[in-house]
Image (cartoon, rainbow, N blue to C red; front, side, top):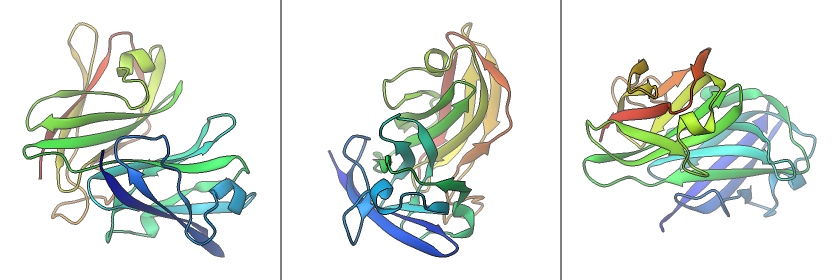
Amino acid sequence: MTDQLVQATLSNPRMGKIFSKSATDDVWDGNTLTDTLSGQQIGILMPSTTINRIQAQYSAGCAAYRIQNSATLVFQRFGFGVKDGLACYESSAISPYSINPNDILTVYPLPVAGAGTTNVLAWIVSSKGVELFEAKAVPDGVATEMKTVVNEQTIGDSMFNSNLASVHVQAEDGAIVDSIDIIDNSGGTVITLFGGVRGGSGGAMSLEYNLKVDGMALPIGKGFSLKVNTTSA
């Protein structure tokens, strides 16, 4: 396994703290960020503090973060990091959140994939909840299924009988998300959404997202799949 430095600032208009971790790629477990001064987790260091900004950054590849209640396992806030050197305070806004004493901040980074391939992450929100999906080493021009990070389920298994609400996709640095497709159990295309490039490249629309779609109301049936098409950097 490989490691990379991941850092995050949690802040409000009056204060902020820096958290970091030499995080192991391709896992959630053990990748809990702690304060750079005290070594404490966010719930211990900042209980009842209301934050409205999370700036997370990784070394190379892509990365997701989540604030999770360690007792209930509920995700309180979640999102993507940006490559070190491309941070933007304005785009790091979140809905204000008061930190619970049980909260932890964890990260899930992926490194840069090999030549001609791309690593991709996607936060998927439905009426059933939120899940992080991934597709690793996606070959250029080949539609590849994305599955949940935790238990490798398809979208049809994980979110069956729910309504898809949002799709937020991040590919590794410099890569293009050409499109994502929702495919039904008969192989038909339910919807195709075009993405693009992010970060410091020409034509980039976001530092965090190759594709960001909200306000959906798409029913997810059994056997549905989520596929991504990419072009590597």
